[in-house]
Image 1 (cartoon, rainbow, N blue to C red):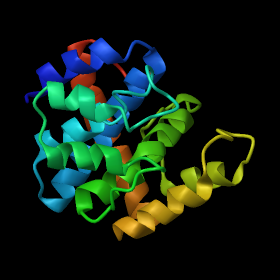
Image 2 (image 1 turned 180 degrees about the vertical axis):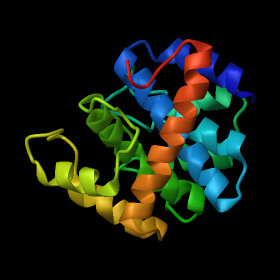
Image 3 (image 1 turned 90 degrees about the vertical axis):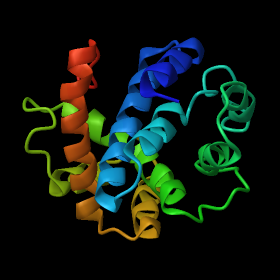
Image 4 (image 1 turned 90 degrees about the horizontal axis):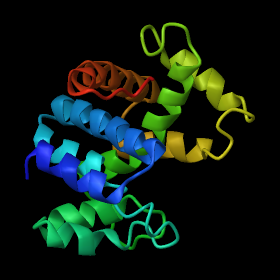
Length: 187
């Protein structure tokens, strides 16, 4: 499936700006990691874009309802299993780079966007030091599990600073593309 078709599919199932932007941010992070690891950027980007496709309709069952949506759109078992693997209740092992990566960037991409929205320069100049400082601030984005942010980066086998830099750079690159399409992660 091409990205344009996947975006249409996402819009059929995701109506809130918050989940839509989160999906775009995770897409950006997945594309950045695909580039870093020499993987298929379109495929990894689609994983990020569609990972929460069932969240709004079935928040209590997420991501376990995504297979019915993705199967109907002709995604294969491997793609669907990778989507399922990012969930905390999933029994699908995170036994591949794409699965480990999807889990590692899911909350981190949105955490970084939340930080950027508070800064006058947004993503520009955002460092891992700034992210670490915000992680210590328990009042900021308090629903985010800080231990999971660091543990998932470790499971991916990347240094935390490198993890943040990869995501920030991916978000910056993707923001330029998104603005050409009429979207933004930062507005």
